[in-house]
Length: 504
RNA sequence: GCUCCUGUGGUGUAGUCCGGCUAAGCAUACUGCCCUCUCAAGGCAGUGAUCCCGGGUUCAAAUCCCGGCGGGAGCACCA
Image (cartoon, rainbow, N blue to C red; front, side, top):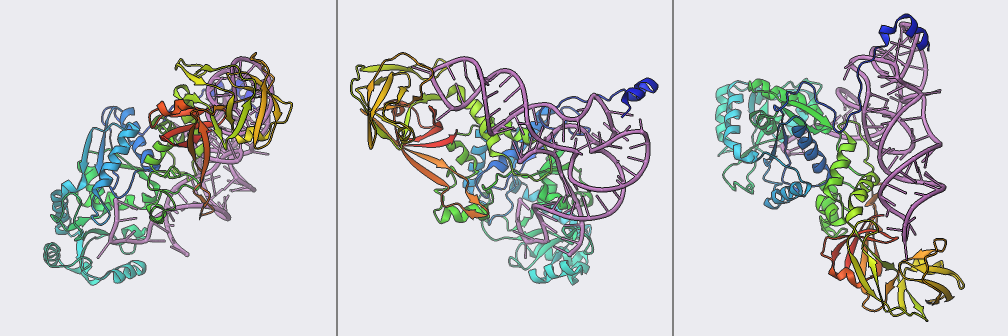
């Protein structure tokens, strides 16, 4: 109301605070330029996917925004799940994304430090070694009651700690943080800090068998690595209290932990629990199956890293749970690849077309409508293939233009089509269709990835395979080339006989 | 069940901390026109949100307060 009235009476109240439109991620509070250190800490337990991309891009963007550093750290403290090939795969993924980090390391290289901190926290009485079995521990947690182990003295705990390296078997003893068994936050009910795992580590083999768990390792690593801002997805939110408590007891510097919503596409799960059976049962061809949200799959499909970055930034840094719009990613991608994608003709579900009075022998067609990408020569002899969809819509007497070639009038339709060439003047008002010469035709398959899960159910029709013919020029393209099949869509050449549909 | 987080057009977000400039910006999707020998890209225009609901505070609330409701996550010797 009454803004005008206000303006007259108390104009000073209306002096607005500056608000300007932001570009990119929201600013961080109280960051000194040049002082920020972020980190990207994946566990090498699987192939990198879009979720990794989001985290890594956020980490890098903030480091860059404030002129700081990014640490790339493998959180490899569970030998049961980690494999050497995953370290490599994640690194390949990051490089592909174009993420530049200032330092790479493995948490497992800091085991001596972690042991030292473990000893420290035990000696200070802030942690104890518990030898209860799993069931008892979880029952006590639920019922908020402490076990006998927690009242053991430092001498006992020290002895048990030393025994963890030799005497105890896996599962027989764990180091527990002395939290608060009555805490409302269940993460604080004397959580595990270290446990015994005999599985050989992919890097250190049998050198260690007492391994820190996530909360202990991350807190220590972040602190000693000089991390100022630790970004993680919001399912860790309840563990913030633990993170800070551990560093508090250890009297270590505390980074600021901030969380963001995890990135996932509707019907395109990222979790290994769901993906693994799919791969093992052969429902998808592997972790690079174009239907999957893995980085390798996206790459194969023709999504470029710049599009992923732009997309991630468009999502901003929020905690609200939402399924990301894949179509937005596609749109960004399309704009990026359009200027460099060669245009070729394709006939999907091809139907033969005979032009009886063809008089041309060859023609030059530009490879791109705007950019100068050269021309290709196509031999013609009056025998063509056109798309089944186009063929269906043709009726005797129709006049259509074969793109870049000449106009024809349909004289016969059916399993094959016959026509007469009329003239070669360009007529804007008649339909224009693409064609493929039948001599030297290249037979390819178009793999069309669709949504993987519909209502939590695996979509049996998630991969459509279309038979198609394309021009001989296709053979000259390198694998990995993005092509726009005119009036069909963008596809990436996956092999001599196969393309993957990127998007319309 | 307990605890925590979250709720702006079909979708994703900006704005919310520090109430007025904005009855809401951008992107995407959709529609139309222009351009174009593509159903792409590009240009222009348009449709679409009383900012989850109900109270309260205030001259003024998407923004502050209270109470509901909806959605998600965590509750491991996984990260």
